[in-house]
Length: 551
Image (cartoon, rainbow, N blue to C red; front, side):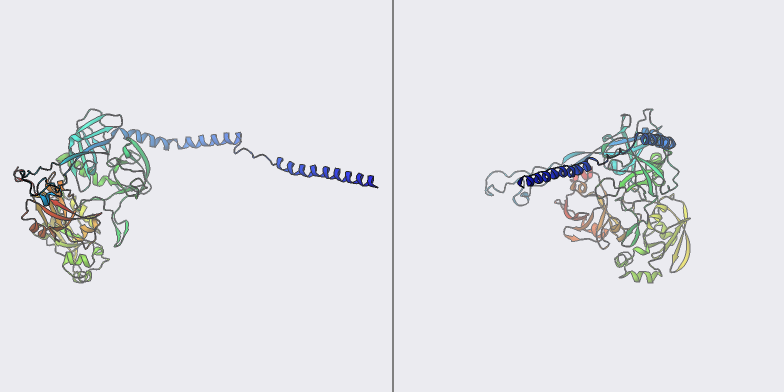
């Protein structure tokens, strides 16, 4: 019996051993039997795709060649513009001299019997700051290159060098510029190898049109990027607090500006280089970008040919740009608020302005806020409150259009203004005058003041100017519109478009008050409270020595 049990136990063990391997074997076999992953692409499929790609490339070859050949045609005319700007920094005065005398040491005894020291004059220190931009040849015979003014601002001709794509370098002999359009022309000596680019005809480009941007971004010379025209203009395209606004980038308060918008990559160093169409013709000058990172974000802007070309040609032919001038201050009805009503019309509210001149904020046109005495507009009978509807054949529904239209008219010529006065339409003929040259050309006819002793000129800050420069409309003061190069104000750190709020701790609100406050300037100078984008600061400006003023 026991043996029989052992026999059955042995059979059971054998059965388990037999089943066990079978079960494990099935599990193991299932894992091993997992099908192999097929190749991502068979050799046959890859061959078929290669043939299809080759066929498509053949079809696209004319399009690819268009980019290549256009680049090859344009590149020899594009230059890198290298500059060295000399910056003069006034050394800080010893703060103890104010209390202890010239070159004093506060730790010396005031009863020391030694001879008093003589004040050591503080000599200004000069720093040389390199810069880089781009440009392109527009006149190969005479040797003229166009770039942006801000690329060569405050740089002397001997400190500018242009470099071509083949490595040739040419020194610059002369610099001509126009601040209001940010255009500059560089004169070089022709070397027989210059190739000029051709301007486009000035017709606004179309959205979606292919373009190339060529220049020296971040110092990488002869760089080509491509993109499309995002928009042909920046006028009345920005959503602002007062409705649709225009892009104001040029810091000249009387700038004539408009820009082509493109998504072609533009970065620092591209300024002044050409934006060309696929025929290699210049649509505009790459000028600025809008970005939170100071590098390309797909928002690039170029001064259009219709603005740049006539300015460049006038600079080349006569050395300056002569503009038409009406002598009026202007604002659009939708820009009028209570602050503008007080400063331009001497009324308490915007409603008073609208009621007096029978207007509404929705009226299309440009409103005359002030008329310069004995100016062209006053002689023609234009008065405050007139709503200008057109200049000649050009409708003027915004300030930029009116300003650029009048600027383009030849001085001495006549034009007709269509306007609405107290609800009635009228037409007046006006003889255009020449806009005063330099930064003191007051397109709006506002009052100005100068201080030769301090080397600066200012204009009353109007609500329109304040808004254009990024200040609140209720800021009162004067704006610096001109500086004597190397003069006292510039050496002290004053720059164009600074807003002066106070003179010697006394608030000023217009040019007349500035003139009165700076009439008698002591040798220790005057203290200005200066307002800038980053805040307010005090700047002391000392007058030039008497002998230097006479010189």
